[in-house]
Structure formats: structure tokens, C-alpha cells
Length: 263
Image 1 (cartoon, one colour):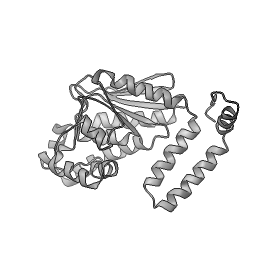
Image 2 (cartoon, one colour):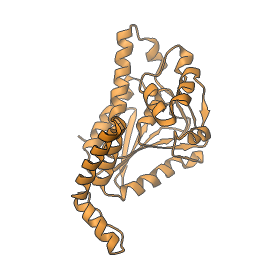
Image 3 (cartoon, helix red, strand yellow):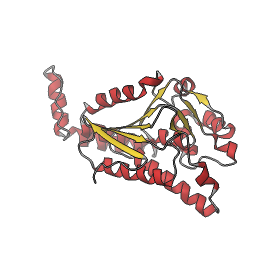
């Protein structure tokens, strides 16, 4: 599947890193078309062997993603239509979360509602110091529908996530960092650079190990501890049998940098 940009989802690849930009100005709201394009981009990135790391960001400087397209939400005429909309967003965000290559959210502005739900589907998050976070759906008489009630408690704990979801409060990037929602906070104009720097660091690792580590984390979080440990052992075995593993161990013993070949 070719890496082609859509109307609202742009893809640029350089040095094994794909930068995916949600470009639906002014606030990069997620309507059906944008969600579908993002799902198509995730499928293409999964199938593209030259891409090792994905950076996901928003177009412009106002927002990463400000949320769902409220006009579309207002036109949902039935519970079944609303359920279908929720299912679409959930399925797209699961594609992002289950990519076999690391996804870094470069949060360059407002990150609310569906935008926060998308950011939480990424594996790592870097935020600008002026970004704002929240699940404000309650203020519209609705609730998060694209994973917010499930991913937020897993990331910041049940008590604080419940508070955010029930109050709809907006919080700062610094509070998001304190709670472990984001990995780094950097000056607003340095978000994309910091994300690319981290992406290059990850891209220098072996693709086999990156994939198996993500898979072990993903599957382990959804399973009891003993089952997660068993899956970790399987992943360890798969990595240990790889060419990259032999190169990494040999390079360590020879006191040199490894030259991974992603196999």
C-alpha cells in the first residue's frame, strides 16, 4: 500500500521516520473523512518496511487535535448512529495503538476530547509547554467515545481519570507530565524537533526488538500477569533468535556500536 497523503492527513517520510500530520484547520477536528484517512494511513504505515518510527502531529500551531467535529456530532440522529461513530473512531485508534512500530504523538497545541483519545493511542507523547489537555465531553452532555474512558485510567490512574471525565476540566502540560500522561514537555516551538530526535533514537534500534517489545507491552496490559509473562518469554525467544540479536550481543562484547539490519 503506497504512502499517499489524503486531504486532511499528510504523510512525509525521511530517514525511516514518517511524520503524519492531521491537517484540518483551524483546529484539526476529527470528522468522518479525517478518521477514515487516518485509518488508511495506519494501514499503509504498517505495511511499509522502510518506515521504522511514526511521528503524529497536528497542522498549524493552535491544536494537535481539538476533538471530534461537533457539527457531525450534532447531526447524529439515533443511538445506533452515535454507536457507529464511536466504533469508527475506536477502530482507527486501535490501528494506531497496534502498529508494530513506535508512534510518537507530538502535541503542538490543544489536545482535547477525541484529540486526547488519539494521543493516548500513541506509544509515547511529547507536549509543548503551552498545550492543554482534557476530556470535556461531559460539558456537552456526552461522554468520551473513542477510548477515553478506557485509556485515561490506564495511563493516569482511576481516581484522577474519573475526575477529569466527570468534571470536563482542562489541565496544563505540566500537570499532564506530573501525572504521567506525557513523557516530555518542551518549549512549544520545539515539539516536532523533540519528537523527531526521539524518533531517530528509536530508529537506530533493531526493528525486530522494537516490534516485539511493543507487542509484549500491548498484550501484557490486556492479560493477567502470568499470561503477560508467558507472552514476554515468547517475544524474548523470537528476538533472541534474530540476526539483530546476534549483532547486538557481538557488538557489546567487541565494544562497538551495533549495526542492526532489522532482521
